[in-house]
Image (tube, rainbow, N blue to C red; front, side, top):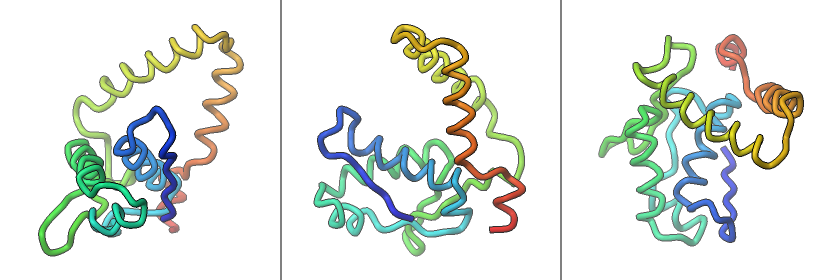
Length: 134
């Protein structure tokens, strides 16, 4: 897994780390049981405070994407092939989607363009069947 962050972005670094890990899972680059770098290691690699990485990992843990224990560290927990999403996930996701679609509309993207971009983005992620053959 190759994470990249933009230190000059308006998006907080912890959120960028969280987002890149979720994207890596969706692309099939990392899967259930795969370890993540320690918070100190990742912080050193990016020359950032380890508490920033810890905040990203805490967020992923709260979302049920990773599990953390003292022996194995942070490990990917969620495998999209293992069943339906956690209860309440779809509703929360739809709320966030609504805001993104509203932003696209406010900035002048028409429905066809939004759908085209969504389709292109989704095509970059692996389907559950493709993840099985990883």
